[in-house]
Amino acid sequence: MSETALPPSFRSLYRLALRSISASVRHQPSATRSLRTIWRPTFEAAASVSHRLQDPDTSPEEHQKLEKWHAAWQSRMDNTLSLLCDSATSKGVAKKAIQNLSFLHRSHRTWVRERYYGQKNTWKPNLGPGEYHPPTLPSREGRSRFYKNLERKQNDRVYDEDAWNPLSELVQMAEGSDGVSLGRIRLKRWNRS
Picture 1 (cartoon, rainbow, N blue to C red):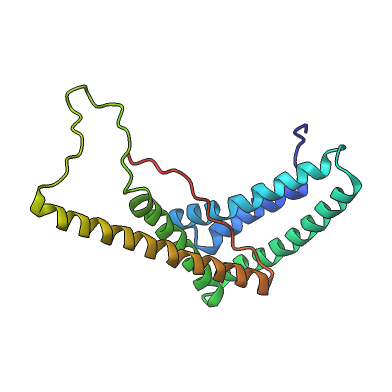
Picture 2 (picture 1 turned 180 degrees about the horizontal axis):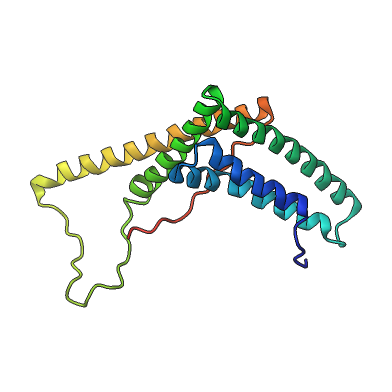
C-alpha cells in the first residue's frame, strides 16, 4: 500500500481537535498532554482508514464498509468537539467529565509505571562486573514474612487490574449512548529512569 497524504479535511479536524482539547482544560500543559495522548490512537485508526480508502487496490465491498465506518467516526468526532467546546465555555458537567478523564489518564499512567511494571526486575547495562549482587532468599524466620508480603503484593496487583476493567466498560457505554469518542489508553513499556 502506498502512503498517500491525508485529506485536508482530516488534517483540519485533527488540528481543531488539538486546539479544542487544549482550550477545554484552560491550556493547562499536563492536562492537555494527557488528553492529547488519550485521543491520539483514535486519530491514528482513522488515518489508517483514510489511507485504505485512498488505496486503489481496495475492493468495492471493503471500500463501502470503510466509508460507513469513516462517516460514523466523523459523526462521533463532531459530538466530541461539541463536548470539548462545552467544556471550554462552561463549568458544568462537560468540564468535570473532561477534567476527570485527564485525571484518570494520569493516574492510570502512574499505576502502570509504579504498580504494573514497577514490580519487574530490569536489566541494568551500566553496572560494572563487581556491582551486581543477585537477590538472596531471606533467612528461615524471615521467609514467612517475605512470602506474606509477596502474596499481598500479588493480590493488590490483581485487585488493581480488576478495578480498571469495569471503568473501561463504563467509558465504552458512555461513548455508545452519547455518540462521542472519549479516546483510548494505550499500554506501553515505561522507562524506569
